[in-house]
Each structure stands twice: as C-alpha cells, then as structure tokens.
Amino acid sequence: MVILSILILNKAGGLIYQRDFNEGLKKLSSNDYLVLAGTFHGVHAITSRISPVPGSGGLEVLESDQFRMQCFQTLTGTKFLVFAEPHQPNIDVVCRRVYELYADYVMKNPFYQIEMPIRCESFDRHLMAYIKPKQ
Amino acid sequence: MPIYSFYIFDRHCECIYVKQWLERERNSLRPTTSSGASIINSPLSGAPDKRISAGTIADQSLRTAPGRLSVQDDAKLVFGVVFSLRNMVRKLSGPEDNFVSYRTGSYKLHYYETATNLKFVMLTDVKMSNLRVVLHQIYVNLYVEYVTKNPLSPVEHPGGEGVAVELFELGLDRFVQTIQEA
Image (tube, rainbow over all chains, first blue to last red; front, side):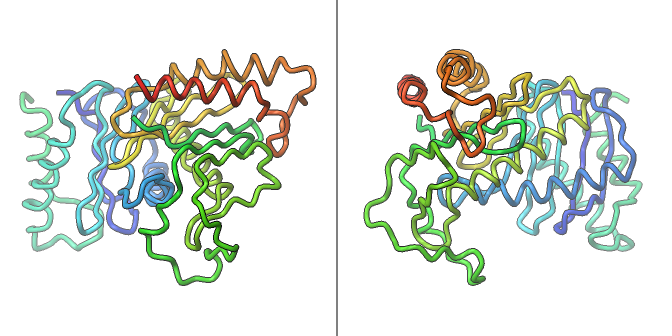
C-alpha cells in the first residue's frame, strides 16, 4: 500500500495536519498547504452545489495522472484527505482507519485544543505504524 | 448510464458551449435560499426543458424554478471548480500532471484540456469509466472538424459564437447516445 500524503482539515477549512509518507508529491511550504486546504474546502462546497442530481455530497475521489485523492468528510465537518498512487484500491478504508486513530489519539488527548493544529506524538506514531508498518 | 451535461471553456475562461441532457427538476427537492440575490424571479416555464442547448449563451434566459442556478451560473461554478482543481493538482505534483476526473456520491466530472487551453468538461453518472478519451475524440472529430475548420466561424468564440453549429450538435448528440448505450 502506497500512501503518499495525508491532510486533515477542520470544519472551517483550516489545515490542522499534514504529513508525507512516500515520495510522489512535491514538497510545498506550510503556507502553500494552508492555501491548498482553504481552496479545497471551497471547491468541496461547490461540487455539491453543481450536482445535476439532487442531494449530492461533495467531492469524494479526485483522480489525476500521478495520484488519486480520497476525501472523507465526517459528520462534524472534519475532512480527511488521503493521497495515494493512481490505482490504489480501498483508500476509503484507510480514510476511516485514520479517522479512528484521530478519534483515539487526538480527540481523547486532554491537551488537544479543538480545531487547532494537531501536535500529538502518539497520533503520529500510530499513524506511521498503520501507513508504513515495516519501519 | 446517463450523461448529464457537457461544457467547453475557451482560453479566456469563457464558457463557449453548454449542453444539458437531463430534465432539470433538482430544485424541486432542494430548499430555496432566503437571500434575495439567489432567487431568480423569472416566470416558471410549465414543462421542464428536456434539452437545453445554449449555443449563444449570452442571450439565453433558460431558468426553471426559483432557487436554481441558471445554466450560465452553473457553467461559471463548473469552471471555477475545474480551474481550482487543475491548479491544485499541478501545484501538488508538478506542471506535467493533469487533472483527470473527480466524483462525488452522485455524479462524476470528467476533464480534458487541449494544448491550446480549451477545456472540455462532462458530467456523468458515477459508474461511468474514464471519459478522457471520449472528450479527446469530441475535440478531434467534432470540434476541430466542424468548428475550427468551419470557414465562417470566428477564430475566438466570444459568447459561444460559431460553436453551436448544426453539424457539431448533431455529431455530439449521436456521440453521446453511443456512450450512454455502451
């Protein structure tokens, strides 16, 4: 399983977590990542608005020549963006697992301030163990 | 599998061709917004338009019930989305990468951009496989043949001038029919 990168956006479209796991995407400055997150948040809202059929949600999977991005939005509006290789199957499972880890090691961390950037060492460790089990 | 709509945008970010194949009834299920700006106060057309073809987009006033976006506004939003996503993809993985498609729970958007920055966008059912080849075919076999090679057509197409020619529309309709049946 090759996961390139994971981003977590809070419900206001602010970037609260970004981490690269494999080579494949360019390194951006932290400011660029914030802009990217904000842009995506807006685009996500518009994609549900331009739906030709009623009751559509926002963007779920984005495909390009070199990667595939899965977006998983929780009921509370937090978005998990998982970037993987173009033909990687079952990324939605990865999204849900990352959400679980987020719930366990971020939300249950008494020192974590909600909607703020995630700086939880145990979340980092468990995420790494899940995405790259051998290292 | 249904194909919902098709858009062409030129290099000046202008929508030069729209075609929508679905019956526009989505507003009946969507709550209307209370802000006055988004309410379109045009007389309700009785029968839903089955085929909204907007050859000359400038003079068309195809609006259905209030709360719905007009075809032009829809096109602007679609352009905004594909433009942002294309830039996002390029920023993330370099200028040689291309945005191909995205899907939501209920529709899929396919994107193809020519070397001259013409953007072809098609909205289809979720289960449709990748249509980039199809969009390329539309460009090569229909757009170039009937629009670009048309001696009466202008070089640029402000307001969609010269794009919605009969041969192009006929070809597009036939083409879409074959994809839908496949």
